[in-house]
Figure (spheres, rainbow, N blue to C red):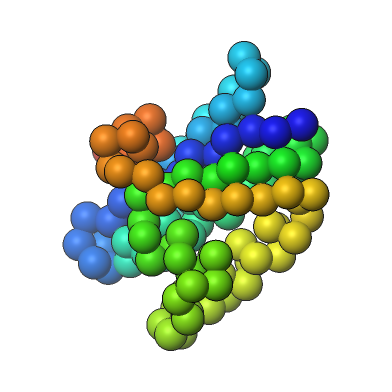
Length: 130
């Protein structure tokens, strides 16, 4: 079964208070979530959102995932196009890659911010509710 996972992280300050949002969008049976994650950089929040979205897709039994996010850095690092140089991102990258290996098929795409509004709204909602 294939699903789309939209993910976004937001940090007010960099680092600063951070929130994440994700949406798992299969045919008709979607799941979404948001969470305040405390002090984090924007990139830490982006990775955390991806991780939570992938965990949710696994819990729902999806075997094929297309992940969509507006962070070029995270997308290209997960694809292996960029090295992960920041020490704070290495554990998050490793966790994301471990989850990716659980799927039969995985693709990650960069989308424009305007195409990621649902996940972005959830990340900001997490910040507003802290």
